[in-house]
Structures are given as C-alpha cells and as structure tokens.
Length: 307
Image (cartoon, rainbow, N blue to C red; front, side, top):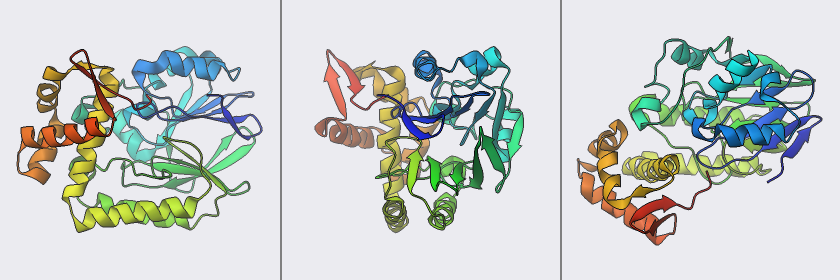
C-alpha cells in the first residue's frame, strides 16, 4: 500500500497489527514517528526507502510510547544514523532503567531491544517535524507514557494507540495499574477537546470521524467497567493473535503450553477467570477459529491478521 501524504513532505505508512504505523518526514533532516516491530525491520526499511529516505539519514525518531510494535526499529536505526530518540519522560525512564516489564516486553514475551533515549518529552511540548509543529499531549491508559501529537494549524492528530477508529488498544491493568481505564477516559476527554479534521492511528487507516471514534472507545470502557471480565476476554483474544503474528505459525499442540509459560496468560486467567487456563483457552480459540481470525493448516495455527 502506498504512503499517504499528510502535509508537505510528511507521509503516513499503514502497517498492520504486529507493526505500528509510521509517519515519515522525508525532506532534509528526516524524522520518523514510530519504528515498527524488530522482526520486520527489513520491511520497515524498504517502506521508508520508498519515500526517498535512507535509514542512515534519519535525524530524529519520535516514539508515541515504548511498546515493542512502536520502538522495534529504534536500535538498528540509531546504530546506523546516530539519531536522537524522543519519547515521553515516563517512557524514557523505562528505557533508561532497562525496565522490560513496564514496557510490556517481558510480560508478553515479545522481542525488543533497548536503545539510547536522548530526549524526554513533556505534556505541552512542541516538536518541530520539518516546518510542521506538533504539540505533545500525554494520554496514559493503554500505556503510561502514551502521547498523541497534534497540529492545530492543520487540525491533524497522530493518535497512535490512544485512539483507533473502531476498536481500542489492549488494556493491561496488571502492568498499567487498576486505574488505567479511568486514565484512558481522561485521555479521551483531552483528545475530545481538540479540533481534529483527520486522525492517523497507531494501527489501521486514517479516519475523519474522530468524535465517533471517541464515543466508541468510551462505550467500550463503560462495558469494561460494567463487567470486568470483558477486559480479560479482550486481552486474551488480542494477545493470542499478536503471539501468532510474532511466531508466524505454530504447531497447534504447542500453543497452549507456550501461553502457559508466559506471565500474561496465567495472570489474566487468574485475575478474571479463576485460573481456568485450559477451559478459557479452548473457548477463545474456538471463537477465533469460527470467525476466521485464526486458521489451521497442516497441524499449525496462524492468523489472518495483517502483520
């Protein structure tokens, strides 16, 4: 899929579920917003090269948060370019202290590499991306260090994982804390106060009905608060799909055991479903297979989700 032009020399690249989307400033002093998942760095480089930007020329990476699908290419790019990496001060603390738990990497068994975060961003900071200025807005909930980037002049929002069009990013209360849902509601309030014509999310296509997307997210959080088990149900579904994307495919007989070896699966089932590991796994896999999100082929499982 070709890149979408946002503003002069500023482009949006849509990826999938394993890799976060990118925004690239392609003129002098190239800037990259989010760098995808480490295993797909070859494809990330190709997509950036298609805009006439060499990895070695990148001057600045801005990360919307520290999760593996948004920072996976940072180390390789920084090693080749010597670029600055900027993220919210909370995320910088996680990276500086080599905290692979708060970043979710170890919790979810994800591949990621530490890098040198050289600039701490604060709520209200203004980041120049070439001639375009974006205001940093701290939007915790999905991630403690989550930010969105807002250009008030053009009414453009880089919403990352704080706002998608039709769904919400996974909520991990065991890492983000028991008030994470309330933090997410407060973040949605901050976004709703902005005058936005188009939003560019961390996953999925750009969208224009920002108010509608906010309302959908609020309703989903309300459903979580009404029935806490829905948080766990949604988390297990999404992270199983994410695990299959990381593995590409896995023998069906091995997947349940692999999940049992992770922190997230045991904790989630303990917290929401009374430790019924095999029963909950079977129930959710049956649903994913029935909907065609997961398929069987020659004894292996894989997902139809776009990486």
